Length: 520
Image 1: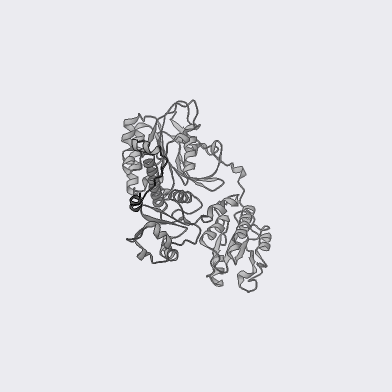
Image 2 (image 1 turned 90 degrees about the vertical axis):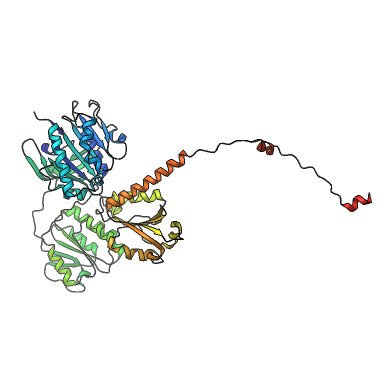
């Protein structure tokens, strides 16, 4: 019988939950926590006589291994991998010196930034060499890759079907995860393009029974029906017998709850209507399924970038900007006919409201708080990769300190934060696009940026922002470590100090003048 290892995911096809030996498998994750959970499951799923080795990068794996594997499983070695390109290039040589990799399962848990310096050709050569090495030793390697940069890796690995025996990815969707198998080699054949919904419980990831999946809507008798709030036609009458107009969005929603594939068009006049409209769209989408076409027309420039993403995440098909004329708007309606929404809509809308709202902080933050705030935003899977914001480091002009330069900075918008480090002023502008950076800086600073600061460094990609925050965090830790190592002053009592301790009472003296002495 051929040697194989379990992937650990329960209630999915057996062929997709087994890794063959020899084999080279790669699974990408948006979040580090999801990769760590699957790593625990893989370890716990192995048999008593399985030979394992865990290679990790980052923090110590004490929490990762705590109660994560069967007591019957033999001890297995752990290896730490530095975040360097040379570490990956010399991985096989290091493993040959450290252990006997024959018939062994190797698990590599590392962030995607570890491969950020590899171009497509270098990654292809590296993966090919790893695959040959595994085949010679009849061993299996599974790479659990997580964090910023996984989308770039997905594109680079999509053509490596001749090298990788399996490629998959897991994307967190607030109440479940989407597990996409690009391809997976089995003992007899290969499975490709399989999509599963996974839920997380106390024992880890498990698949959802297909019997609980709602069946597609078969009836399309209201597909040509248009239900709209009356203001979206700008005073024009219904365009045909298929059009129905309503006085407000609430009446429109109530009628939409009786439809299956109709087109519902909501109007938005003020920004304070966003939350109510988001709840209405979310209720319609969760109740009536993916067949509805839900459109929001902005009537007065009320939709911000973050609001638009919230409405789309709640189930809207299209957001029409206020600058689009009526003729253009009707053309956009024709373009979405026949579409079905394929995005997953979480059951709990509060997760969307919290995850897609701007940061509820602005202005100056201490360096540690600044770093933790940016890291939490980078780990938000609801926000698009490389679209979470821009970080800028500004060096003040000669004669001006970094702390003094903060008086020139006036951040009005929630999500715009700043701190001081390395004699620079660091700004993070949430949901700001790189092409809007100059405009944003003009509104933030009272003086021209070119006059107040001598130079600037900009980071706008998630992997670069995360790497810089990691360096700033290391500076904090090193400064704390140096402070704790400073020798404390020893209290010594000298003779002079002892004399000063015993203070004498003053004795009064009577001073006489020379005239008084002559009289005597």
